[in-house]
Image (cartoon, rainbow, N blue to C red; front, top):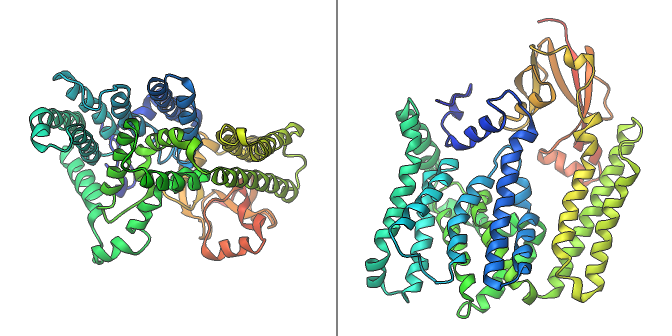
Amino acid sequence: MPLQSLDENARNTKPPLLFWQGIISTDWGTHWSLARLRAPNVLYTLLTAGLLVAVGWKRSGSASLGLTAALLFLCFFSTYRYGRVFLTSAPETFWLFLPFSLLLLHREPRLPEGVFWPWVWGGMVGIALLYKSFALVIPVVVALALWQMRAHHWNLRKFLRHDALRLGLTLIGALMFFSLWFWLDPHPMQVLRDFVFRENVGKFNTGGENYFLNLIWGQSSIWRIVVSYPLNAGLLALVVVALGVDACKRRRHLGSVEVLPWIWMLVLAAFFCLPNQRDERYLLPAMPALALLLALRLGHLPRWILSVTLSAAAVVMLGLTGLALLLQHAAGIGTLYPLWAILIPLGGLLLVGFGLTRQELTRQLLAPAILFVYLCYTIFLMPLDYGPGLFTGEGAEAVNGCEVSVPANFNAREESYGFLLPGAVMKRYDHWRKPPPSEFVVVSLPLDQSPPQGVILAKRLNMIDRFSAAETRDMLLGNVTHHLFHWDWLIQQSAP
């Protein structure tokens, strides 16, 4: 301590627990690899899926419901997207869902008795706060309070007499856990300035614009929160919309196991409508609850919506296969994919075919078909993750201990090159600018362009994931490979 950054604006913008997790998983940085950094997040994801299995098994008496909920959670695009190293949300998702899952395992619609449990809840929530933000304690306590108010038939007096103190202890326990950061950090006032006021309170700063106008219109308006659950669900977006319609129709007759997940989802969405900055990733802690609700009601949702979802999965698998063929043709360096790779999209399309033609299999094959989409994407990325996608040879080894200028199109993107050129020191430059006059530089160019000037040390295949409006329009007109796939050239220029 303290955790430092070369970028003054990036200091104290996140609590330390995620960084400590990375420090431990890489053995204090001595084994610096993506696999070690991702391993804890994969474990957290599987533990969250395990909670869903336990809740479904307990409440239905059968493992089927829990397994379905776990598979649907793994099918969500948000689980895949934010399971990567950057912007990972698997830890706080697990720790915030854990107290709710324990309540769902407890068949009585109220908090367990005793003074011990509030501190247990507070400890679990406190760990989540150390991963994300102290502000998350508010929606958790509000959701628990509404859950208890409902258990007391909305009798405020009973709630205050039986549960207000216990929820207060939960709040205090969580904040005490979070306050460890201030106690351990040798510069607590900087944490207060950077994290509390700039990073959290600063999200209410409108930059001189009208707060209420931003609330109803713009890129970060309330409508972004409204569509966040379907967007996070990815291919299951239509199914999530159908679930919402189903719940509205049955709102007076919801089962006891449905009420708490809906309370948690709605409270979290309402809470994140308040800041001026709104984003779908803020609702990730409620995605396990959404998976449980989907599993409970999947058999009651219209089959045609599930069929549309299966068809969309087939379209994506065909599209990924087409992109693989485009990459194979455009790279011009021989065979990129093994022959067995074609079996993955064929297997996925076969599942979709069974799901569309066999009514009794539509619901059972929904989750496996979507998981095959991710598997197809993994196969598509094989040449980019291995072999041609790596800097290899003596030229790449020659930059060990040297400073290398690398292109970046997003915050901290230059760090990804640190895994490709271990031992080198990365120096960022904006990807749209001319490469700086450094001795060693990585230049990213489309596959159909000539190599840059200089001594070529190594090259690798790369896929670009952010595009300007003009580039997006050009891709929609059919010029896909020019913008999507690049060669990264590692070159040595004349010494500056």
